Image: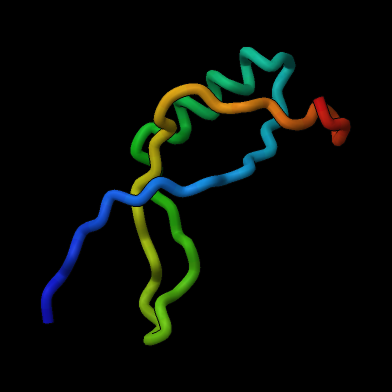
Length: 68
């Protein structure tokens, strides 16, 4: 059996509690610098584990549940 490594771009929506948008963005950048992520399980039950990082700018979609 061979192991293959793929570089895949994923889309995520993340809610963050912070005092300001700037603080929220900083928190995301700090926490997602090669973060270890568990994305559930493969069909055989093994965990789907990967590292995630933020690449570039990201869009603000809501503030307190209201679309911006």
